[in-house]
Image (cartoon, rainbow, N blue to C red; front, side, top):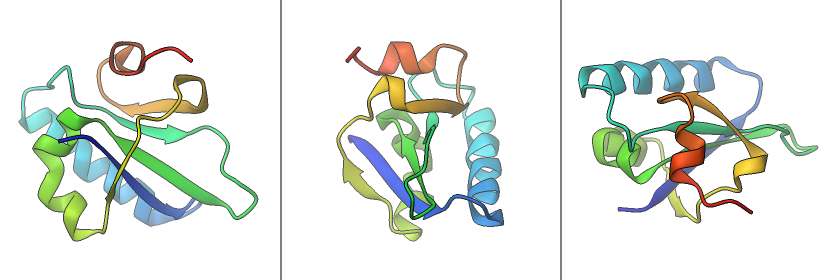
Length: 98
């Protein structure tokens, strides 16, 4: 299972609800080190937020991601994202530099 991407309006309740739901599953699953939710730092002019889920996150949250239409994607660039849910430093562990 690879990286998953969900796109939605940057400002909105939906992204917050998705984050809260993932955080609950992350906690219930014992805080797996390979699971993280990341968000793009700068949405485009269209205001679209890109939410990235690591392969470990897709493993524990896959059915929810499928239900909301997540799709496969390449890993994000480390310098373009911010960790939202996961262990401190997960973006360094999960993403290659550059």
